Image 1 (cartoon, rainbow, N blue to C red):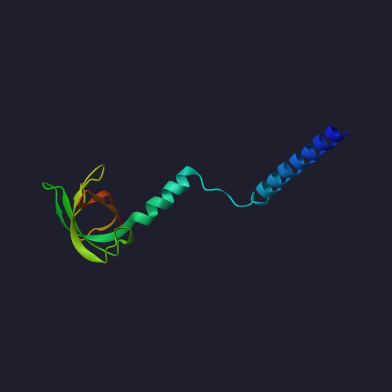
Image 2 (image 1 turned 180 degrees about the vertical axis):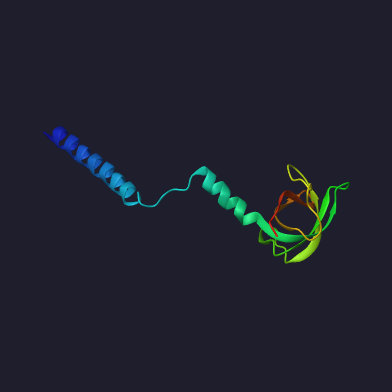
Length: 120
């Protein structure tokens, strides 16, 4: 008799635990979970900045940009030169162009890893 009572008690406990987990999950069903692409997009947006091109040096692979604050790099607004690396291209850029770009640290240097011209 004691064994049957113990099994029943364990069974009821198991059902209660599973029911509470299902209830908790169902309670959050209306909160969509961001997918991998959304999380990546949010991360990218936190490092994107806008600025105005002041000078382009295609031979050296550099661009000088007057930009707003770069919080992820702890930098205030300023005008500075960046080495362009990775898939970023200076093609079609000229002084005066408004751009959206991603700046990052590469060792001890600041680099632009992505840059796109915005419509003026």
